[in-house]
Length: 429
Image 1 (cartoon, helix red, strand yellow):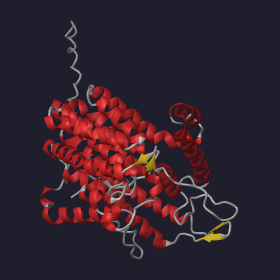
Image 2 (cartoon, rainbow, N blue to C red):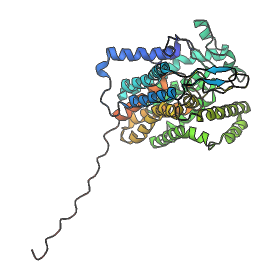
Image 3 (cartoon, helix red, strand yellow):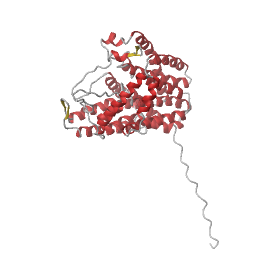
Image 4 (cartoon, rainbow, N blue to C red):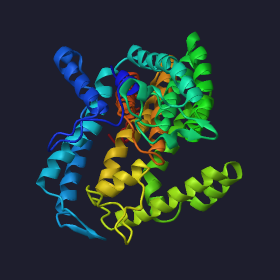
């Protein structure tokens, strides 16, 4: 139920009711699953685990940030050849519902559905199986070009030129972009690697098949994530925890590093140019574009610029000349640092929780939880270079948050200082 909409329902289409964000396949699926849990599994839902109100608290901060965004952006914004409307109280309702659907509910579902080692193994096994199901469809489109979405639903979900890469094609299947397919395959590879490490035999078979398909998909970032995750899955959990911690700190610190010019963008572009000059040009354009958007966001750093393209850059002739590819710059431009931290804490919070609790887990669940932690950490890292395409990463983050509490043993008891020797009586008494 969680994966079928992403894998097979039409992409980039939805119903746009008044005062409510567009209802696409991801939001409808989240609503359907949440409603089903409330109607049929209410007694089994997690209620009293430690920090079970964590997503509610984070979304309360995000909602307060939305109010701040509206209050600080009530005036119309004059741009070349246009006047962008100011935000009103109706935008609080619309943006608040969007936060509920896109942030709170996915995390809430993952937090309450996956509570045991069996639940976690089921999740990883389903991911591995779905990767095998998708593999022939991906291979077909790599061979004949992305056509399945048009054959079934009658339209292409994105520009066909974006599917062309290195003299061939990237598969789209029923997702919105070839990169979304490659990222999905990355999550399947991490799941298969964890199952293989846990000595589930068919995990090795699915790992080999999915690696072949991912390499043919011609997507650099998911391939790098998958390669690092596969190597880490066979190392100690201590190493995995350190990598997860480093990635989480890097993700949270990235906007500050970019705004203070601490991040070596030029050196990174030069390094990529030695391997793939075309990718280096694309990366350099991305960094320059983000610099302009970051300067715009810094004008209203706390609560952001709000919607209606108020966060974008306009040329003198009135055309938008900026491209928002990365989720971090989207969150920073729309909601400021409050919006950025609120969203990304939902990803890195469970990772920090894993770093604190993995030592208290038994060997088998520790391997599986470590795989899930790597998946969430690399998904959060990917949001620094790409936008969020579906709700699944937040479901994984919610699952990791609960499983770290449920599968870890009790914390070691603190040793009380031993009492010193009692004073001996004085000789005169």
